[in-house]
Amino acid sequence: MNHMGKKEILIVEDSPEIQLLVNAIIGKTFLINAAGTLSEAKQKIQNNHFDLILLDVDLPDGDGFKFCAELKAVASTQQIPVIFLTGKSTPIDKVMGFNLGAEDYIV
Image 1 (tube, helix red, strand yellow):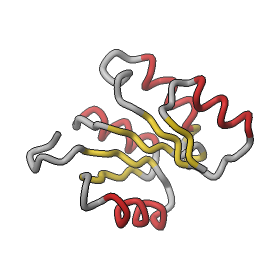
Image 2 (cartoon, one colour):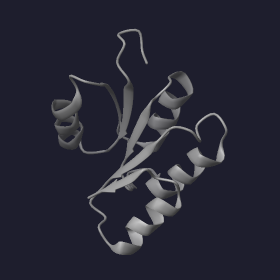
Image 3 (cartoon, rainbow, N blue to C red):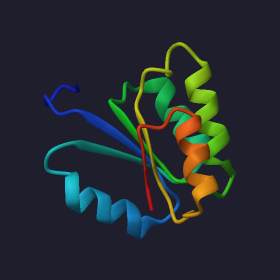
Image 4 (cartoon, rainbow, N blue to C red):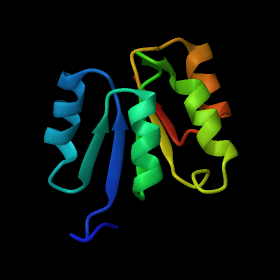
């Protein structure tokens, strides 16, 4: 929890519209921190504690699946729950997300 007593969520999403939508829906309950790229997300994760990561798969500088695998392989971030929030909707994509340790996969 942050200094305001709210749990903090990092949304890793390159669409400003999706970032705004998520903030409008859950921003009163949670503190939302947004990153439009994986490199920005990595920097924010180094400098903050997050209670949840909402992660897109297709990002301008990389693959969300690989990023999730990296998070789950490092002791300092492996306990952060990850929920994929993406347009990739094939069953193979969903299975991959869950196999990487995601808590949920929302299309």
